[in-house]
Image (tube, rainbow, N blue to C red; front, side, top):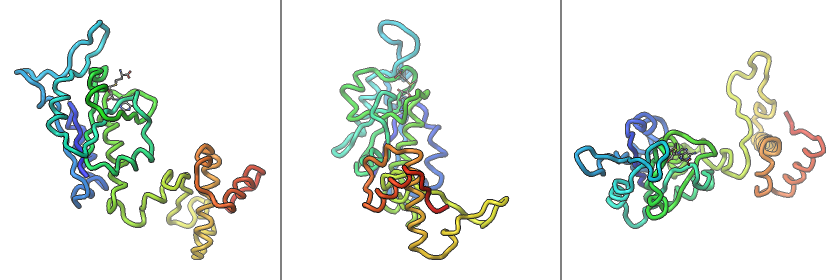
Length: 245
Ligand code: SAM
């Protein structure tokens, strides 16, 4: 897979793309990531990338010419051009899974008041928002999307960290985790996790995931793939039963 990120501020990406799982995925050749300075696609001595909005009002708008020139130089069959935008469709684990199948992502980072509308209408294949709030630029959203997508690529995570076990991976929130010590300030690790009984541990984890999802995100249960026993457990939660602590 290849991801090209088009930005006016390439320096933002230096640290995050080198560290930890993203850095390792690049070293292992699972993903190539390019960070392209939009200014390099702007014409003229001053390489201007933004201009005043027609009709007046505050703020600047990213001009269409450098964005079209940049994308047209990068795009090939199999590319998907994504504009990061607070008005786009909401990013989620499902969208991350969908994007992880794409051969080549081109992520366009807006700035200031955003991009000229013709970029949205005639250049972007897709628009993605990382949530209902407004950031100063599309760089952090591009990193969020890149991180969520790359960790889904086969080989990016060790077996123990498989994404299917994460929250949203199997349609539920994940249950709690504990590590040493067994007792900390009088708070003990749940007995089931110390039992060494793998079937009991698996049952405990599943019950905790169901309980946590029911308490925090009951909306997820509407689409989760639950066995009849699990559905019965949810009904019992509704009647006051709690899972084994
Ligand atoms: N004036 C725009 C509006 O009201 O819809 C907001 C522009 S914002 C200050 C500048 C850029 O940051 C956007 O073009 C977009 O690339 C990025 N951005 C801000 N919030 C975002 C979000 N929640 N998700 C994705 N991108 C976002």
